[in-house]
Length: 94
Image (cartoon, rainbow, N blue to C red; front, top):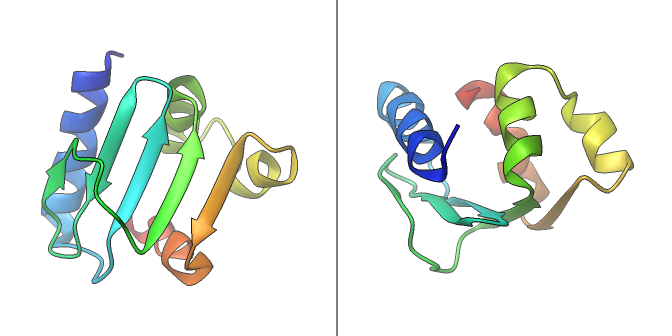
């Protein structure tokens, strides 16, 4: 899956949920995917309530369910900065 396809998929999921009330940024090795508090998705490098640093392949694994988020966090495959409570809201998105 390309970066653009992944951005589109996250955009569709966020639009269906109507936003999470907080902004979340995925900082990947190919660029940023920012989910605004209203559910609008961009590739801007703006400040977010929570930033999750993750590789593209691991993000795809998290979204498909092939990679357990807690395991990924414990093994350093994802790094979370900012509000950890916001990161926990992602289970409602994926």
